[in-house]
Image 1: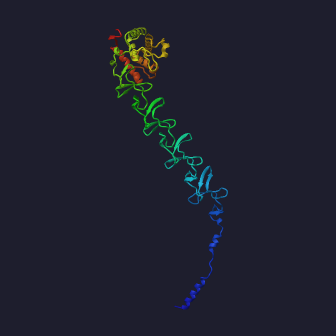
Image 2 (image 1 turned 180 degrees about the horizontal axis):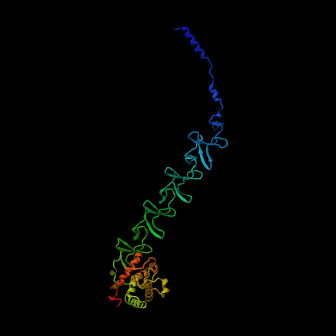
Image 3 (image 1 turned 90 degrees about the vertical axis):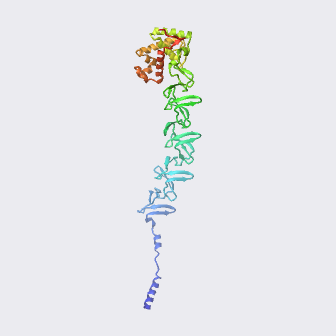
Length: 440
């Protein structure tokens, strides 16, 4: 190798190593940054410059976050800000916050748009209420909002569904509002008071009585309360008057209280200690069951014959009605105030020329006059006239009864009454002391 040539090359390399370099970094640092796009901190405040060298204002999204710059100065906003009627919260880095945020011990919910939530809001499957200030309500218990009641737990959640509070049960709709009145939940109908408590026991709904069990469900069928029996219809309403069980046994329920009656006579039927009525009228012969006897029965007989002759009636028909109405008790008084043998209402006394509803002659004469009027009004149809005597002619007309076949349109109680009177009318056992009461 040529040693001289090698030395020459080394000398050249050594000389190059001593050439001074340029300070390029210093030149970049000193350039005017305001001509660049992006963020700049000026005197402790942040600004964002656009490509035209002007400061951005309002909302910008230079990355995955939204930022707000003051409309006048362009300065980046932090904390709460109001824009077009909505409130937003931006953190210390200027980024708009979404979702839940706790500030000074209070919780706020920032929607997907960043706007602060107010009113009732749903987050996942839970409901919450936010005041006008955006603060989440944490009221424990019931709170009234816009005329509706809502129940809040300690975490601010609005309850839906069943709520137990102070040993009372309440129910809130899917929107959290408290239910009042009648409401069907699942397959069960419940009633809630005006203050929301689930009703139990006897409750009057639309002038009908219902009994609600301790679980709030409405009772149906026979129930025993404090030793008394009641019957609730299929819809839960309390039954009154005659009811049938199993299609064969009949019971009578007090028209006012609904209690089943025992050991008494109703509409001419004997009712036993178990509440069941006897199945046939012939089980109660007049000679052994009538309350009138001796001189009283003879006076009744004479008055019946007099009225039958006066009004052109069959005396046995008058007797059959007396049997059904009072069982020959001149002092009988119904729960509605009807009086005497033929159960005349006091408001009819004047029209019928009566002054004393318990006077045998006056009562039979008044009742016979009504019976004759009804026979004339309904073209001599005995069954329809009997129905009118029991229910009033206005109800016969209202029910559209034009023939015997139409009697099925009337209530079961009226139908039973007509059947009972007709049975008495045909009954040959009507007698006093073993003798026929009506002489033929």
